[in-house]
Image (tube, rainbow, N blue to C red; front, side):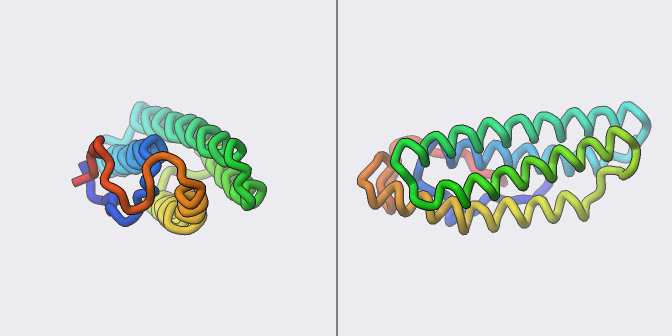
Length: 155
């Protein structure tokens, strides 16, 4: 697998289900880049990349819904702003996929790089802020504690 997006331990929120979801999303981005780098680029290739991007969008939506539910449960004060960030990314991803399907644009590494940078910035910014609030409330996976379950990282 490509090293397009190598997971860093410092990105963990210490909320196990959120960390697992983030790592799965990073793996999916790496798989998309791997597929993009394949030399055989026919119609089947474009369809497969389109399917992979749709899968990524669906996993992203599920992750956002899960994260937002946790925010609502603990009355996270920045919930509205955080949700806006999620909605913007979902809309951008859906538009990108639609443009690919309509053959107005192709899948390119530049767009995937922008997505990667948004992903990292969001995790290390907004998601970390949520995690700090979550842990300050004394909820599971206390900040700085060792978790009993290990999370596989991208190598």
